[in-house]
Amino acid sequence: MSPAGRVDPYPTYEQLRAHGPVVRAGPVFFVVTGYAEADAILRDARFGVMDDGLRDQFMPGWRESPAMLSISRSMLRTNPPDHSRMRRLAAGAFTPRRITAMRGVVEAQADELIDGMVAAEGPVDFMAAFAYPLPVGVICALLGVPAADRPLFRRWATDLTGVLEPEITADELAVADRGAGELRAYFTELVASRRRAPADDLTTALVQAHDADGERLSGDELLANLIVLLVAGFETTTNLLGNGLVALLDHPDAAAALRAHPEFAPGYVDELLRYDSPVQLTSRMSTAPSRHGGVDLPPESWVIVMLGAANRDPRHYPEPARFDPWRPQVHPLSFGAGPHYCLGAALARLEAQVAFPLLLRRLPELALAGRPERRVRLTLRGYATLPVTPGPEAAPVTVAGTPPGAAGPTP
Image (tube, rainbow, N blue to C red; front, side):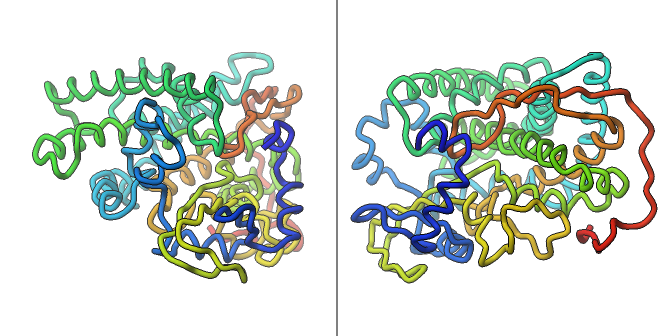
């Protein structure tokens, strides 16, 4: 929980792991570092997210916080049947067919952003120049947010996501509340606009679901889910792009192989998600007794599932601290598992699968231009700034065959 621990949590994970895959940290407080145990708990119907009753118990006054109230009314922090009802309404925007159809949009936006990096003729902040605008442009297109408004969301979302951390100070909560208030005001106006002039976007679909039958989606749920879809739609992908680029630049042989073989991108992206997960933890509350990792968990146990630690469990991934894009059977828990598995996981993967080969092929001399600055967060792991030198643009490099000793990830 210290600043140093948040910047590099992996040594602490290994200290925790030495005590077992599930560690009791208090009378009803447990920490999970094992892959099999984390996967099982996330899928176990006896575990859910914190409900209003438990929030009243553990976080008195949460109803007066716009940030906590917004998050709590979204599918992110609700249990079945409410969670299932809200998720079904949004799922149509993330079908495999629709995601596949978006590849051309993602490629065009990524190309345009690389043009901007080249035109800068000097060092640029990769987070501001590429990692943020690509996913925010994609999710805003799905929601129907005008392109001119997209720059507004980075600060609002950064402020709001402080409430996702396992602990938050009064000052940090005030900042999160400010971000939530600005996002609610924006989406209140967007909802009114879509009522006046419906469009072919997810906002219109959710507005119409609310207006047709308030029991399908309440007014608070409508705004809360629009906010969460926006924030979750780019925060995770932004961090994946930043963390992934640093990993690739730190492993030039692997980067060269991906430059020559963009068809290997799916395997690379899964390994990048495992190696340095953009989401490091999630939490669950138990509703019934259970046993995981040789430890008895009583009802009303509060379980912190350390996704970043589970992704580096040596029982599941040999030599887990080694970045290996040729690693077989990589199924990272970075997007969770079970009922709350990230709705936009396929879209995030698509954006990264397009972005990394394109960056490496168009900018073969792309390099760090200074020391990256980590965000001091534990839940969302990423960079605040990532200075890079694009270098001269070049035609794609072609390398015959597959790197020695590597069969290559399955496309």
